[in-house]
Image (cartoon, rainbow, N blue to C red):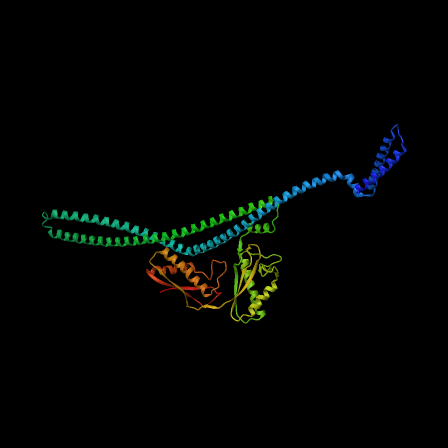
Length: 511
């Protein structure tokens, strides 16, 4: 457009210049040539100004550009500079976000691992506390024996002192009798008239000496017997002291484990706090992390993902109404157990229940009613006894509801009452420590592995797979093995008829 306007102005100026040159006009004393050039210049200037005024008048865009062009250019330059600054800041923030995301993932993995260690430590602590509670009656009994033994020792010491005093007195009497005998012998030849009396006196003294000697022998035998009893009491006291020392050592070890677990928990909390502070300083929001980390910092985990909450045996041939009643009973048990561990309901969810979730493969939402319908279908179509096992589908923390996942499994009969589950050889003359280790190994590798191989359904993510052997029962078996004092065959026998999902109650026999 500008090129066309320049061409038109040049053409018109040339035509006007030729006409002025031909007329040979003179203005202000200028030569005709210079007058024609001035006319040509003024015509081009006027046409350009008129054209620009017309464009400014009829085009708001051109007018805006002419009036505000420098400001717009300055603002455009500032905008470009801000865009470069924002781009650099965005790249830096993206790198920081990537770094913090990887740190968050690493810290989350460390947190999960340390929370699992903490749960194991707490479970171990609970087991140790149970053992301490079970040993407390024995400690009290042994303390009572120590007190009675000390009392008997005191009495025996008093008797010993009395015997020593009697012995000293007897020795004094014997010396006195011997002195009198010597005096009697010295006077024997001098006193002939009193011979009978002296003989009688001598006989009495001899008799008295014999009685004192016999009494001394009796006292000596009594002292020997009391010394033996004292030695036996000292041995018993030593055994009681050793048992008390072992119990005290176990208590000290338990307290040390608790202290270590608390230190680990404090370390994890400090790491989480520092990570949260770093995220706040970076002005970057990581979706969902803040809420989860807040719960992990404030409350402990009550269920790990996949950990069993409750189970319920179901007989075959149930109709839908009865099957729904059984499913409701299982959920009710789960709510009681979850509330006991510290779970709480929310305005939208109960303490524990079957909630909607998204399928990992299809990414489709599966509703609660669809899940319950599938479970009821499996129950009503079962031809044999089944078991419903409810486990936590997510990691659940104290104060949260627990999301349940229900599994339906067959529940066949595994053992009958009196059936041998497993057996092993144990040497009963190897000492308490070796016997205890062999017995523990038998429970873990013999009984537990055999039960899994035979089809028992263990409790998922739990320290107790099928049941537990109480400390008194374990001590009783260890005592039986010690009394045998030889290699014996230890058998684990089922006390009752057991199905796959039932708790395993066992007794032990020696062969």
